[in-house]
Image 1 (cartoon, rainbow, N blue to C red):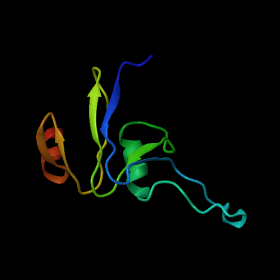
Image 2 (cartoon, helix red, strand yellow):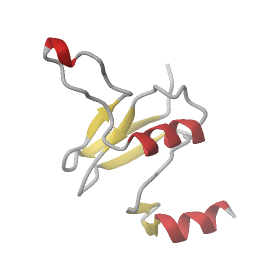
Image 3 (tube, helix red, strand yellow):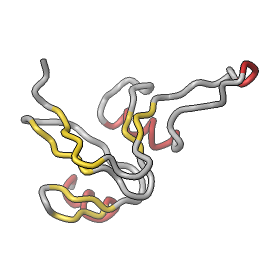
Image 4 (cartoon, rainbow, N blue to C red):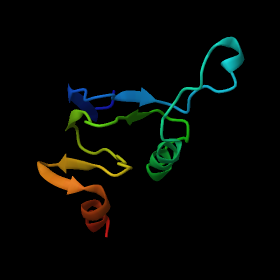
Length: 101
């Protein structure tokens, strides 16, 4: 069993697990489903080395409050968001690039 996991403290508004979705089933009453932002869905999976159809956590407006337990995990944050990492407020487009470089 893997000892790296997220504990969900608060789900947030519109937080869902999404995969690539279903298409071509509209003729039997099943609408298109899957991630709302397909570009960032694919980008997130590619950046962490996942299969491109692996599920992701997608949220809108207020994100979830997650506590990570374990040694190491690889995450990708896409979009224009502000989040906390180790109690420090991070702005994706500014601060994360500083961490990477």
